[in-house]
Image (tube, rainbow, N blue to C red; front, top):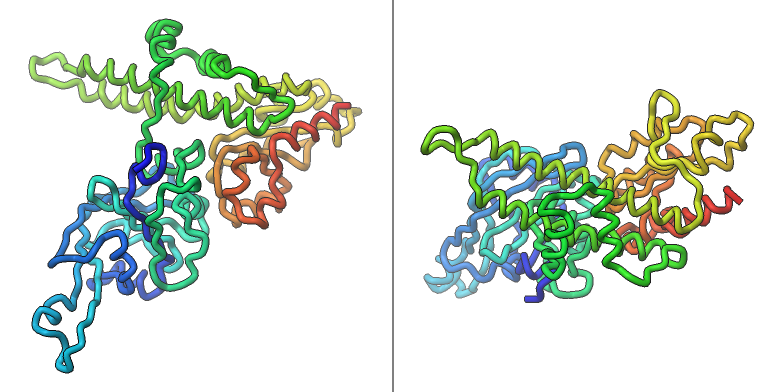
Length: 418
């Protein structure tokens, strides 16, 4: 098992598209998947009825939080007793594997075409995911676990989780955390320096972004803007998680005692937990904007960050600036706007209402493998998606033809400013 690969968390993964019959089974009293012989690769040959504790998750693009339940699945061979008695009347030995599951809210939400993933975890349990058909999160999970074609009716199994494709990097880490897998990343060599520099507290996002960049030398944002942006983001993410884990551990060690002797300040604990979650959500987007700002400066681009346009809208970046935008004589074709969202979901539509003078808008994101349905709609709405080049390979070949990388975007803006 190699640290930094999917094998650190999973022994093997199986996936399939739910058929109409299986979708009906999910809400009936039958509660058994058929055609599961290939699961033997990751679950092994059952001896009797083998129970598995499972975390069951339903995912779609609309809900910020997944639907999550605990359940017990049972893996067994219905023909085991028959073989023990010598087989069929004519002496034939047969195997027929089943995977039993209880009724859950997750199974009640599943419909035909949804993605079903069953992962055998390192702790011996199962992670069972149902993701809405044609959603970006379903496409991301397929990419994460290396499933390119699930057209056939049975399970596809991936038990090789130590290939370069299975390396956990920036994009895959975010997908893993969306399904409840906490990926531990740290740079302990920097911890003491950070604690001293930031006085044992969280600094502002701008300060931390600048510090993260200072730990990286010999990067030229003009020659390789795509690589540099991802490198800056990756370094900041690792450093932040290192500092965050230390500060959270320190806070938890002090406890949340209430006013009474044996009381616990539940509200205080919940407030602290919520602050941790909110900090994580807001920080990534702000960090991305901070790094982009320096990248634009180093590429000689003129811009205004969060300028106010019509209806008090605030596009993240407006090129070359708000004065030119408000000047009716300024050539509209020389104006560019860029929305920035670390992840899109349905929030990408917000960008469409920003900067009315600009018909063709741009949106930069770090989200991997957005569904074809979403990117087709973006194109129809005249919204161009911009991603660092390394993330293009998570999209389909047809999508990649349409995508723009950071280098191409900076050259476009520079040409319009010349």
